[in-house]
Amino acid sequence: MKDGKSFIPYNVMRKLVVLTGAGMSAESGLKTFRDMGGLWEQYDVYEVASPRAWERDPSLVLRFYNERRKQLLKAEPNQGHLGLVELESMFDVRIITQNVDDLHERAGSSNILHLHGELRKSRSTKDPSIIYDIDGEELNIGDFCELGSQLRPHVVWFGEAVPAIEEAISIAAKADIFVVIGTSLNVYPAAGLLNYIRSGIPVYLIDPGELNAPPKENYTFIKEPAGKGVRILIEQLSMQT
Ligand code: OAD
Image (tube, helix red, strand yellow):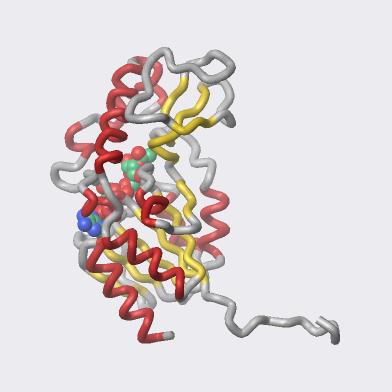
């Protein structure tokens, strides 16, 4: 900059922030939590996904997550995940996901923040900064970290803090367009992210079911599964650029 004036590149991409939930991966064959036949109908969440459960019966907790991991390893990203990668040619796409699966990564998305942890990682029960990739399907009693303490799944349990929420809020606050896909918006603090976006920016909500979100002028509801919904979103956004 020779003249010292500020320079704003004309082609700075707009920020498209996407909040995803279990419905994003439903077409990949992974069960959601609160739909009919969902995981929380089959299991008591406090028996398998809480600090109390880990204290009481760590084997049961590990079995629950080993089963989830086994299913994940058989699953593939779906058209919805792939569509979000396509959007990177038009926007600076940031994904905030509540999902513990790695289907956004495997689809090829570049910027992903996991709010509720990652199923294919384990962490030390002594020092939470020690995190490992899990090799294969199982984490078992007797699998220790380098300090000699039992490893636990690197996921957020009910009753635990969500360490990534501050970063998620800061990403949401910078959005030019906000998209919500496949989440019932029942679980906080993730569901509260909509409260941090700038007022009036376009918001798209993709979900085949009824959502816990009141209609607003700037909200567009696309009542479709993720694959078809993301396709419609791409068409609508392409018409505006
Ligand atoms: P939910 O099971 O609460 O909601 C899933 C949403 O996906 C519902 O709104 C469905 O209508 C929708 N859905 C179903 N099939 C779909 C499809 N093919 N395409 C798009 N949407 C579809 O799951 P989450 O909102 O993700 O937390 O749940 C939030 C958190 O609660 C999870 O991260 C998990 C859970 O307990 C922890 O385990 C900490």
